[in-house]
Length: 412
Image (cartoon, rainbow, N blue to C red):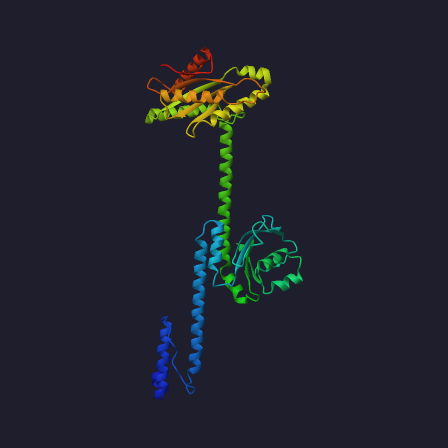
């Protein structure tokens, strides 16, 4: 192979060839240098000029690819859909001109398009989440059919030709003057659109369509994955709400809305377990509304039910969050009072008894209602949670036998 050094070039031309050789070698190694200075007599000058243009084009392409890679990395860093779309807004900056990005999804049946998200630097958003339009007759159908982004560089003129387009009117009201509408597909399935909007007319070129097409699949896949993740979260939240509702129904007295008998007995059992394991003190109160049968006989069961509800609300408002109240049966209520010894549980019983006696039940002039309390504190003489309830029951029987409207502490 013949080397250019064997061609016996003139000295000035040989120096020029050497300079270009060094310059091209620097370009190959990724180093940018100013091309050699030549005059009009240099036959290599046109070649050098073209090489410089090629170098600039390659550099621009490298920068574009790096930005595209960075964009995908930025978008993918989000988990929830709003985070991903916020990252889309940030990531496309510098690649496509815009002051606003909106995202809309096709309905499950594909018949309508529903706006999901928008972020704008132009001012208040008029076309926001929840805006819906039918796909039938929409120009967006042609975009899905072609799979290619669409440029409208004069939204005002477009609206003048299609004054029925509400979405265009809303975007114009926001300050948009040109738009780039980009379809989103996942494995050939249409997902929706990203709408880029600029406040400047004529902002978009074919190059911007190309930029989006290059990473459209990745962006659509990330958006779809985040959307499915949010749907999974919403589904799990619904299941959790349903579970909580079922638990509430299973543990709540239907009339008074306090714990039912099984649930309050479980609360006593749990408190007893904590007492045995950790010596954490607690007390139990068994309460009975005095002469409640007379309320039903005099005013009827509807009034009696209302009195039970008022009583449960009255006592429930006077206990702490760490305590529990449940309907034990009929007009009897069972309370678990946290952190109480014998003196404390008897004091609590007396305080609640006075609150009940002073409460104005709606009984049309009938005298005040009172209640009797049987109290017991967990101690070494107790053998089980059931034993404590039995002892509170015996103390309640004693209170009623002694004339009612009083509190009695259980003996050993």
